[in-house]
Amino acid sequence: MSFLSILIALLIERSMPQLRSFRRFDWLRDYSHWLVEVLQIDKLGAWAGLALLLLPVLVVVWLLASIFENALFGLFELAFGVLVVYLTLGPEELDPQVDDYLDALDMDDERARSAAATPLLLQEPPAELSSQSLAVSRSLFSEALIRIYAPIFWFALLGPVAAVAYRLLERIQRDDRLLDESLASLRISARELLGWLDWIPARMTLFAYMVAGSFDEGWQRFRRGVALAADTYEQNIELLRQVGSAAIGLPEEIGSAAAAGAELRKARGLVLRSLVIWLLLILLLSLLF
Image (cartoon, rainbow, N blue to C red; front, side, top):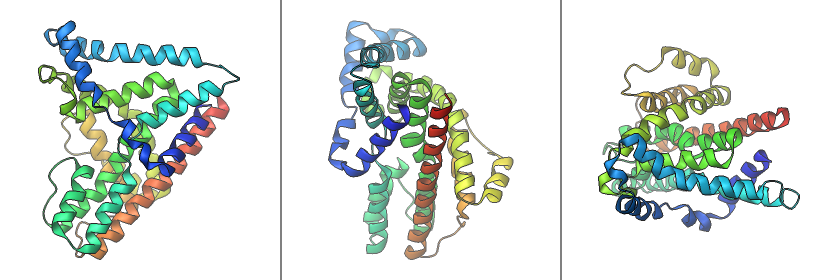
């Protein structure tokens, strides 16, 4: 059932882009502000505040999952699973953002390139073409984990509650606009927890990148590991970028917009092939358990 929910949700994401607006988490700011006013969770420690922030939402998801379990021959359970997976993907899809950057490369428009690179890098992109395009290509390898692989892993392993918990933590950590100003310390705790939650799916993604690309190059890069990483979260991100880059032979320098586009397409191809491997692994686990 979990495999079918994931597959249908991925197909909906591809075929119905107009539904992506439902994956916005703007409600989280009003919700966190209400918790500050009513429960004063800002006066608690970061971990306690984070737990109280997440718990009501997760309890609601757990109750709904329990109600829909096996209801109407499993159809309600399937529909609820599809809804949860779809809402916990993203929240933005990678493909359209990659297409925007490729279009900017074709136009040779520096301003358009910078604007298209920003949502992929989540920061101000380098101005120089080579550095910018390499950063964008490398970012795909880590963004694929955060936007696709990790939520479907936790959904397949532990169900809707785990997938929702992952996406809420990711939004809290990466989008500080969604938290009340007094809850800024919660982002540190969310980042630490995400580092551990990403650890297993990140290693599975590394394996998928090596199988879908150059296994030997990817394995050698994995063995060398990450030289510098501030925490587990950053280590996962850097390892994904390094192994993914090695698996497709991403160069250290890119000399033209045409070459940058070619390398970005190779990176996207690796991510898509790895998604197929992920789906096969989830199907195998579903059949075994």
